[in-house]
Length: 172
Image 1 (tube, rainbow, N blue to C red):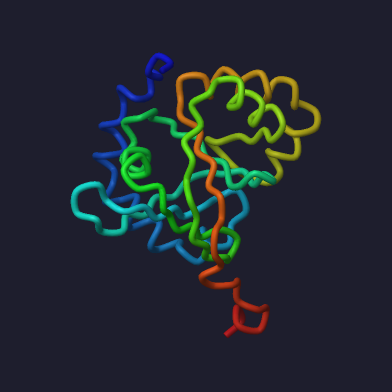
Image 2 (spheres, one colour; image 1 turned 135 degrees about the horizontal axis):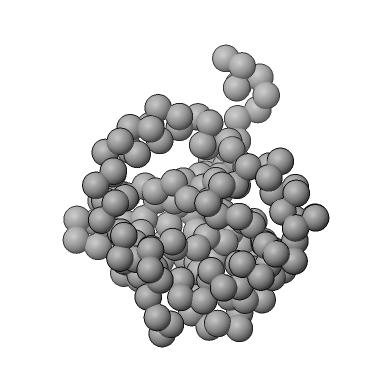
């Protein structure tokens, strides 16, 4: 296994900010359920077996939905996936059950981020457009380095639980 990323040593920060983040996600839930580049991932807690939801930047690929753990294997959602790979994802208005696959093989991680680069810290469409066109070589180079010590997770959708609302339903 690769050396732990420096950010893993800072994992106490998101743990300390868990309540404000939970409030923010609840307050802006409708936005995050529809926002491109974001996914609400629900796992089962390792100890309690209760659903645990986390907001993550993502990239859609033909193989599935790709997310990368900033905090390495210290992230609770990664540890939950190691215990139970069955997850639920809410992305772009869709709610799907899925199966998470931890990708540890370095060559495969590098291939995935090279083929489907995205900017995890800030998945905003205008920024992605610039990064994927003009700055693509720099983005790919940085992602190849970023992903080395971190687990990459591919979520393979299994079953549609709820389709996105129709345009008429959104207005209501």
